[in-house]
Length: 251
Image (cartoon, rainbow, N blue to C red; front, side):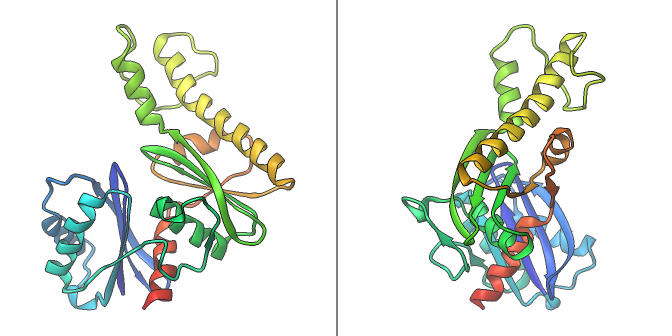
């Protein structure tokens, strides 16, 4: 059994994986002030996972200061030395970017999982602090993508820079055309982002010259993807699956 962790800007998603089966997933806040050893120990105890059962660990991270803290926490709790994903590892994916080492490990891990699970070409959408879109061509090569402000970032900017717009929950409005300020903001945030995703998929497929499989993951995907008009597969475990595949290739 291995411990897999995806460290994002807002949350750490972690899970235990055995023979390719994800036994559980949990989230904790990304915070360099946290004692991750205590948090990790509590999660394992809550899930009734014995430390002796964990034979390895792997981390995908876009927050370098937290990466070292988490490696130390894993070492303290499990005695295992965690692999940290980078583009120079054996990932089974050709990255056709100007500077492959600059590509976020979350994008790489998602693409690795995608080509092992879905038909190509692929459009992979990760909706977290940022909304990232990456594209894998029919030859299973990572060819690029887009980075957009995430919904939370956009809404925080909007409310902090306006005098009369309140902070709102991201609940679906009763109607597309809002009848009050909150409904108008909810419609703009949810349907606006859904329309953005639909439009980006259209443009990507036009540039590719063919239809693509579209897969979405991330904490906010479940709020937006059901409102999209394209057929988009939701996969909450995409990154953990990718970490498992990379671990197997490098152990």
